[in-house]
Image (tube, rainbow, N blue to C red; front, side):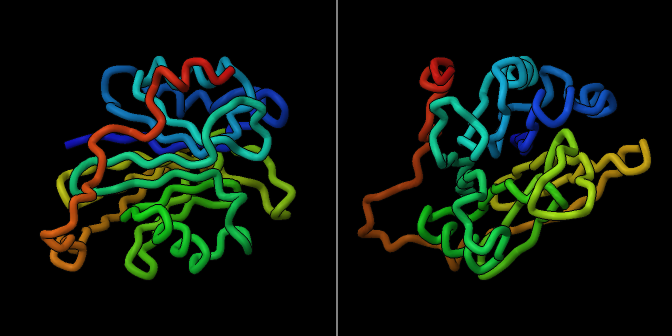
Length: 213
């Protein structure tokens, strides 16, 4: 079992002062093995905070990040391959078919993206599991008129099964929902003659990320 935190769109300190205190109480060190961040951290302090939760942090560059994070990254928890993008590459914004096309290009089972802020989303579409953790801080977005609900997700990966727990701060209380995705192993089997295998290490190693600022 691997517990992965999926989080992003902080926009700290430009739009929001900090993460909700109730979220910080939940995100304690020692429980989460890996963090996948959809970008728009906007300051080094937020990045360093994530590293206190888990040292294995993978961040992609958002449209408001000035750091040298990559535009995309891929990690593997066999047999699940996860791709991460910020989401501003998707046109129209948040379009499921466009996100599925990106997932196919990245050759991943799960595609994590952000950028929309307005709502959390975890849905299976066209053979891919598409996850948008929303904005962890509840930062406003010019894309939508409605207020953003602070949210993040925890993915519990157990072999071909990804159980996603959604945490949303609604009316001052944390609400948790659960969504399950199961990869069809038979449908995704590679021909035996193929020598290209999923990498067992992240494509953007931590040492590189430490120097992005």
